[in-house]
Length: 454
Ligand code: PLZ
Image 1 (cartoon, rainbow, N blue to C red):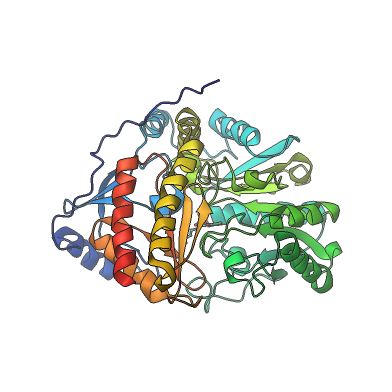
Image 2 (image 1 turned 120 degrees about the horizontal axis):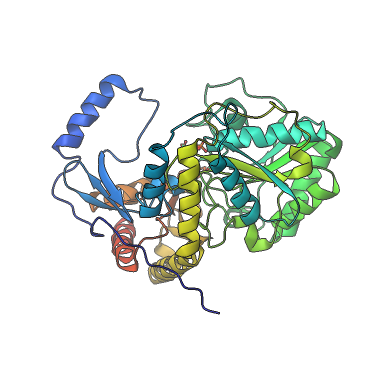
């Protein structure tokens, strides 16, 4: 059977255009106003201000058009102004913008829960709760796991990123800029080694062996009886787009199940077709007890969710979970529309297509540049792709080259994000609706920038 999918229609011309120096005069003025009033603790990767955005294009206030290879950190997978999302939001705001689901509930919340229960892995009965941000979802997943198990300890991995609130800072690995001097941190959080194939001391270690290394540490240093939950990003995001070796995730999930430990997959960044499946755990058939979601879920509207085993959620007393804005009706309408677009346009298939275009091109550059290359590894899944940069001929992280490449891409009108514990990873997170031509134009710029630093 062939699946009929629709093609996206764009409002803005899908074309890169740089008018001259930038930041241009209007952005420069906004940067000055900003410096006077906005705390410098909130940093922006790009020094220009947005006037409009659609599909794979971002327009700034000075008439420049950038190719968006970041999608607002994997949020606008359906594009920044998907007509279905825009229409659903307009329709909802004309009726009511908020009542608070904990006061006077509405159908949209239930519809989102039904959809999430259906598309997340696992054929058991599920429950869903909605929140506003990824960090809030993670906090609440841990709350549910602790209450349901009656245990306290939580395990997180090296290179993990789970948010900026107090508990999620504790779960996050990297100190600068996320944690430094923001403590004290929440207790009973333990960190264990990840499977990071490119940086293993023993490069031939298998996923199962890396999992055993982690399991031994959990058994010796914490004890399964004290452990409420293991939280893991199936592909680590901020930490460097690290894809664990095959077999690692299933072995950790199996051990958790055998020991009554709640296995939480943090799919805030990797979820919603980003990796070419609804969720990154689908690639290895891993079924989490609880899955945390945000970012791509609602086409840019702030919404997050936790979905998981009904028996865990049903342990929580009425009133134990919630929040004023959680599952806001406008955000719920946007989520239903965004998930609809993902289905209608087969955006998981698009993500796999993007993977093929990008990895084919980047691996060709890597092969062409050979051992003199700054490209240490090209990795990732779907449209969650990365290049880890190294000092040529070594595996020493090359953060300067990473910064230089991102900066020169920006000069040419391509928005590129970086990440990684060592600041040496270029990550590509294009909107899944981006057209091949625009994507290839962006990759031409990236390729030239890589060759220029080599
Ligand atoms: N879990 C896996 O990727 C957010 C953060 C950028 P919030 N990642 C981008 C920054 O510097 O703040 C993220 C994530 C994973 C949780 C979160 C947190 O999601 O919506 O930012 O709270």
